Structure formats: C-alpha cells, structure tokens
Image (cartoon, rainbow, N blue to C red; front, side, top):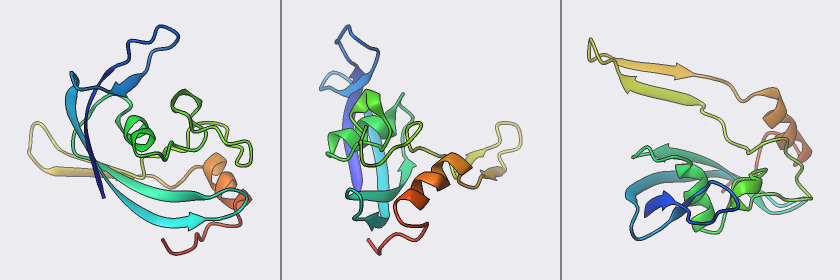
Length: 130
C-alpha cells in the first residue's frame, strides 16, 4: 500500500511531534505487510519505503492509518502486551546515489538484538503470512 499525506509540525505545546495537516509538505510512504502476529496482541511486521523524507514520516504515516509503531509512545504505539524498549523501527537497508560519482551506494544492517527479542516474545521470528 501507499500512504500519501501532507505533514507539518504539530501545534500542540506538550511535545514536539509531526502530524498530518493540510498546510504541511507532501509525504509518501510505500509499505508491505511482511506478516502478522495474533498473540499476545494483533501486530504486523511491515516494510516501509520512503518516497519523501519528512521528519518522523514513517511514525506519522503508520499512526495516520491506525497502525502506530509498536513501542512508539509519542505516536500512540505503546502496547502493554507487547513490551518494546523503543520504537520498533530499523533501517534494514539504506541506499542513495553518491553525490560525486553518481554510483548507487547501498548499506544493509540486520535487525538488532533488542528488536529480535520483541519478535521472539511474539512467538518467534516467523510471522504468519500477511
């Protein structure tokens, strides 16, 4: 799927956060559900692809479609049944065109131990097919 909204800084004073707002800048995020977990609470493992680069874009977009990031207390993703030490976000792959050569540059990184522990608490690292 794709989430396409306009994002701008929230006017709420209690904390600095981005929000979907008509006066914001265009933001697009592609996403694919890689799998789902039913226990202890329904959650999904999702791959996101940024088409634009707004602050907190993935966090804002997942909240906007009713699926905030597990462990993300700023954007409503805290779930008592799924303890997570931080927002469950990981850049598995980053890529860009090198500014001097124009060559494609790519970096990959495995899921870190704290997040693999969260997956293990959901019943393993193999989600049900999404």
